[in-house]
Image (cartoon, rainbow, N blue to C red):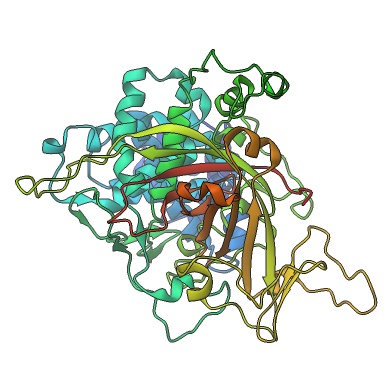
Length: 554
């Protein structure tokens, strides 16, 4: 006997199915499954192949749609959106069930990453309701939580890198506070190899000026750097075909080093530092006692610093419509950092927004514990990287100098590879310009406009190169020592800074090289080392900073 529902007109039946599935934004669309099981006739009427527009409309009620429309102005057909809806339902079901099996894992993790990159709030709400952050932690511990002897020989680096990035993008201080010390310690051990094993381009093109791009240069694959510690034999990044809005793609996961660094700092900051009780209470007390160096107040400032996490800026309220011209949506924060992933173009050059680094940056750095030199009898490399210890404060007040046509950028060898010194004839003039016959740079200011009839205003987005200079401020100088900085933004988005002591009598502290990126639009993180070769210098570590002010008085 046929169901009486088979007599309902097709459009009315589809509307009933839509209302039932979209009644709650955050609940699984289980009501439509009951309709599909009513009879074979209704099943074929409401199936994906018969009416993709039904599932596309449900998608638009349960997930953010502004970012896909902005990034893919063509090609978002109902069939493509319906296919993506099926992928997202599958990853949410996996998270609810805590399914950490390998079957379909890569596809589901990529789907989850795209959900976050397209999120204006609703996508992240769906992931949180499905307890996705807890699922990521369980997956990381399942794959990487054992001892070195238990780690599989042929590891899938693409899946591991995705898990680290998803952990970084979804972890909040609330989740960290609910973790036991044992879990935090386990996660720190897992993340250290990623933080101390960087991947970089095997071509000098990465150190070229910001926007100069030779189309004849083919972007090579990511290669393992010459760091002392590796994370084991692994499959190449980006292997395997992934489906995204019905498109078959082979995306490449960004370097997990920077996500791992952010996570390590966030997990370490959950434990309060011990403030030495013998120190003066504040700077006034130190001056009265004729004492130099840090005070208790300076140590408390380090203790109060928290590495910014992207998930901490998330609101549990569902997003309301807003004018994107005056209030940029949350998803736009990923447009630059993940441009290669979003547009499926590995040859796409990173675009830096001038002014992003201008201002006062504060944070901390940690040093990798020094491992005793290997003897002839122990020629093998250590199975795991050293612990990261001795959290210290870091500060730099930075200014940016932009190069415009017809001037040429300073050669990379002169700025990045040989000391980052602004050598003559480049001199810091009173009008805040770096000038020579061949090279020319103008200082960036947040409201830089032509101030006289003889000056021509330049659009910062048209800059050919960005050079950075800076120094520590007086409060940092008194407590921790004074330093000066110089560097540049490379074409691939890498920020390279060299730090040297302000005072000549402190040259024994050495020159340090800081290499990092802007992570999730909220933090400047990376690695540091002495300016000597990594293989000959035992001193290296990681750093994390946040911009506290966009302006500073030089």
